[in-house]
Length: 342
View 1 (spheres, rainbow, N blue to C red):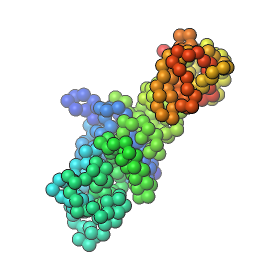
View 2: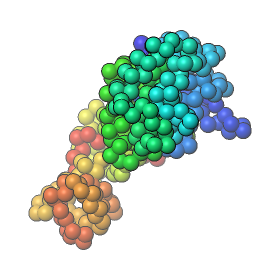
View 3: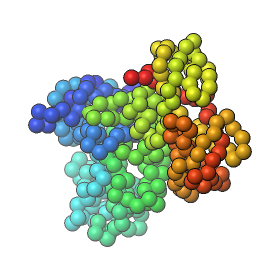
């Protein structure tokens, strides 16, 4: 059963469509990462699901129920925004209990719930502090605790790690993923960070210019993009031109069997990930020259030239080549993805 399903959602501002027929679904109890560049409409989607904005057209289903006309407070969906939106005049305990008080819960229930939630998110012992006394990570935990306190069916996270430094960001990712699994809350996490989406999502929906261009598992999204836009979003890639006939790809680098290829024959391009090109000092299938090198700790990013091709590749930092040096390389076509040439 879908925990969330959107069908042909449209939304415009000042006669300009921000969302142009958006459809996707999230299985009950799973986390979907809504991925895309800034300004593509991701946050607008969250606000429409929560009921903070009305869609111009389309249908929104939560737990199988059509909720287009259901008010915010009855949808069972809560948003955690990237800038926290904590009440500065209330301490941690009061911020977390705010939603419970609005729902007329009794005092004993509120005390027990706040105690449980603060411990769950790692805030126990500091519940009397005010937002101005907290770090960014602590503020994010308060915002998360406030959302979880009302036991939502749907959790919506709008760039929750954007204002955190890298170390705190990693710990918050782990906390949210663990809590989401433990509580079995259907969740949408909005992000523009591809690594975040790949590591946190049960599935990913990639949004470009107000459209979902692919929804898939993290593995398929990275390994089997359905279009060049998806492939390019996940970083540097290589396109090698050639011709396809009887599932054999013939290109400058040789002839390769395209297992499972079901597209058109004729001129196609093979998508090759940088990690599928291996470099060697003394022998290999092809010769090349190092034009550029970027050291990144455990890996090095290279650009190599071979004829008219400028190929991106990634090597373990133990395999260190110098700019300007000649070398050999092999290309692994076993997981190539093919697109029709235009």
